[in-house]
Image (cartoon, rainbow, N blue to C red; front, side, top):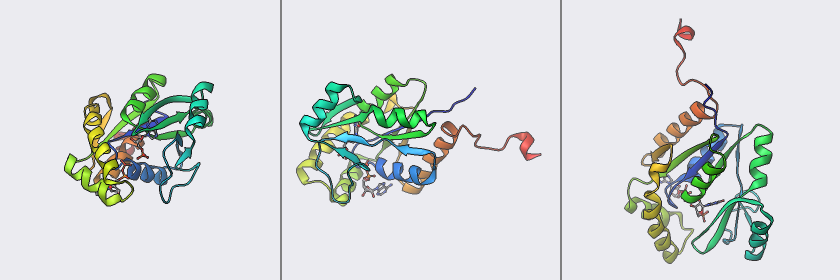
Length: 200
Ligand code: ADP
Ligand code: 5GP
């Protein structure tokens, strides 16, 4: 029985470390592609349109909804975020594997859309205090935005049991190693240990 999954979905409260984990997986596994979402939030320093997100105006996003271009979308922190049908279908048709960075509701929607093909990973912070420290050290949000993200984090933590795996991101090295093992097991479909015959 093959356990191969083509869609690796990472979710976490904002600041828990899923972008860091996603970047590591993409750098480690050449067959993985990132699903570039559409969003109406402003671009952060260092972000690139078309690489990190497709940055749209609100009316452009609404048009995309109307045309049925999105597999799922949510309004988060006052902005729209959504998964483009094109980024998933083109990659899957090529036989590539796709990594998603979406919120918990997006993850559940992706599982509903592709029930047999998703591996859902939840990246949890060791505590809400640590989450607050990481968000502040990232220097990408105002204090008001950080408060909004922390308030939402509690809701997101309550959805952990809907995921296949929960990675508590305390030590980053341990977290990325475990994420790599999971991709080897479920995406590459390779056994983690040599079989008895191979060891002979
Ligand atoms: P997310 O994508 O979930 O919002 P990020 O990957 O941007 O989170 O991580 C938030 C901040 O925390 C970044 O500055 C990142 O470098 C840092 N970080 C991530 N994982 C750890 C860890 N295990 N220990 C300490 N800092 C971390
Ligand atoms: P950020 O503004 O920090 O990049 O993302 C805020 C939240 O939006 C994160 O939880 C992120 O995972 C989520 N997000 C990003 N893209 C999508 C998407 O396409 N769909 C959904 N549902 N959430 C997304």
